Image 1 (spheres, rainbow, N blue to C red):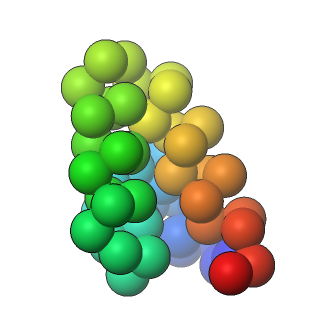
Image 2 (cartoon, rainbow, N blue to C red):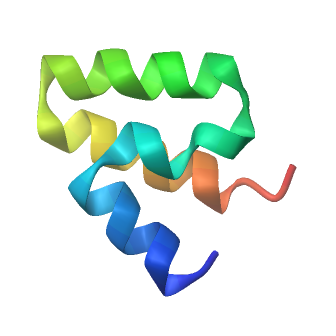
Image 3 (tube, helix red, strand yellow):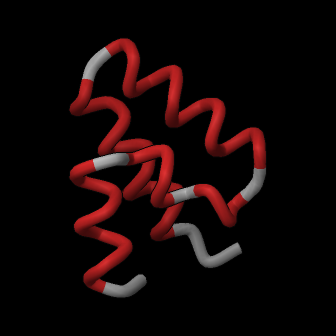
Length: 51
């Protein structure tokens, strides 16, 4: 996980996980709509997953 991905996950979470698949982007987008913090946490968790 690069520093650019972390910064992107903090400022615009759905864009940070765009290469992880459509489901991840949709989940992070919906969580970001519910609140900025849940979206950031979900993006960082997905980015930290090695798979």
